[in-house]
Image (cartoon, rainbow, N blue to C red; front, top):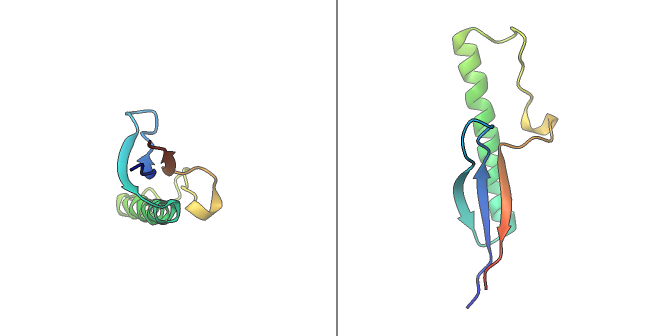
Length: 80
């Protein structure tokens, strides 16, 4: 029995190796999870900046709907 898998990968940002986060049987489920993680990561980063008092000091992180860059991406892994 062959089973195709869709994996969610977290970008290491050039500092570390990419990380396998989770896997799914369907692309739509993987895309949904990647999107949830993308927004959660964005919210965490904004919160960190606000708590550190660095908001507005030059670097503003764009929300996921304003950029094509994705920290969490979906990759198809065929099996068989």
